Length: 81
Image (tube, rainbow, N blue to C red; front, top):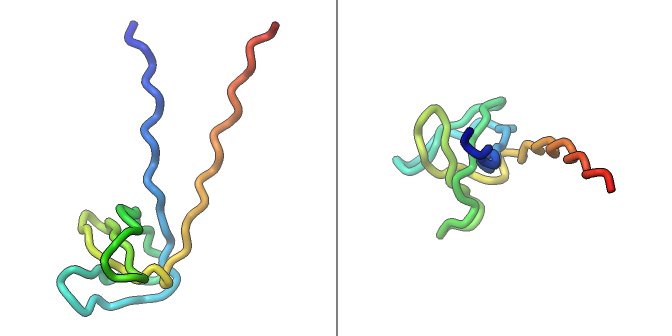
């Protein structure tokens, strides 16, 4: 039996709070309620993150979203001594 691999770390996600219409080709058009997968928070332009929405990767304004808190994994049982 193959060893069980640890789960892949999930990428952070953010929920869109306000609509934003892309002004350039490298930007996402987002609307309230969209869920964006965050690719990078480190970009040349402060205030912009790179994310994926509907298969498209582009920039979006970071102040238009809120990070979705991921639930903590359940604690692993400790072996009895």
